[in-house]
Length: 245
Image (cartoon, rainbow, N blue to C red):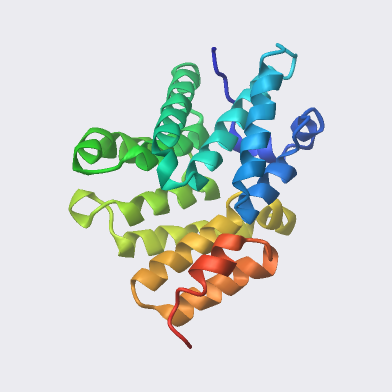
């Protein structure tokens, strides 16, 4: 199956694209914030089934399929390790194919960097995939340095990359704070409803907690829940993991 992808911002935030989708992006994002694996898999399978019909809306739906699959991969339990690996490989192939024809798509590059990073499972895969992930994220940054989703995924990449290889918590904090500022400089509706802003707050809190800046982490987790009360990962996992105030 030949995959094609529209830029993520157009897919998730364009009223025209959303109107043509059987599965609205808002429904997908609600499932993401709830951490609802059953709903995410259902959405992913519905998009896959729609793709098989060969409708005129194939291209945006193909990207939505890739994005929803990436979100599914983040929620799969450890006992479904093979399913997760297979899914991430499939998404990687689709993004790489898209980027051959659209090498300037910064958000697709950033997503590819995140997918490659998520595929790392040990030292050998880190050697094989780590450099590719970092290069995709840096290329995305070169193309769109003011894109908040690029900054978000680049910051996450820094968090999981050892300092000796160009990453580190300090760099992650700076980049995630920059992503936060970029979101907040946009229209308030975009910052509140477009994918990435709650994620940025959650990831920034994680890095701050790792640096033992617990009050600052608690503050950004509170901001995340103020705009996304159903963000279960923050509400039920990250915030309770902090030491008492």
